[in-house]
Image (cartoon, rainbow, N blue to C red; front, side, top):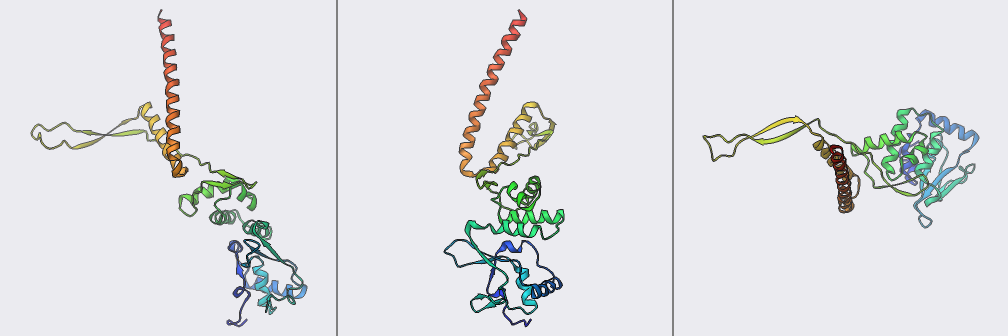
Length: 278
């Protein structure tokens, strides 16, 4: 084909979802093109637009077929879009809005045509998460045919690397908006480091005494405080900033309630001890 000759890509926009899977090699495309010459285009070309009033249709499925046809000399485009004479054996299917989810459709259409390794499936999971982070792990897992725990692991890994945005709500498999529940990782040191002032040198009463670091085993109370602090800060990172004030208020209320319960238990234990002493 002449390098200056217009191709279907010059006239038809491709939806990003279509590029989730790589194109066939040139030899495979030629083989496909020759088959279409002999038997016609048997699979439809899928086009999609955001809404009914939009004329900005994009190709969702059919890149390889259209390229293969042009590669073997079959004219794909005419003066009014697709050449009906050359594409007469196929249907051009037009969808808009919620009639078709381009991302789910592309994966569903291609996942059965290609044999993907586990690593390739993980890569596909990452691409879908990057394109549609608002979808739940189970929704993406059902689309690709992997375990939702695999999707969760890929999401956590790519979020940590900054490749996927953190989202507050996700869409579940039934289309409902659900808050994101994140695992909280607690990191607690086995020792606490205290900063202490060394004793004041007798020959220099003006200068402040230097600092020294001392380490020692952590006591149970300090351990609980550290765990609670780690939990709160990880929790704050997982919820929107506008909810922080309400979160702190709720935590303070819980702590007050816990304090009352502990005080009541202390009194009860004290009463039992007094009774044993008598």
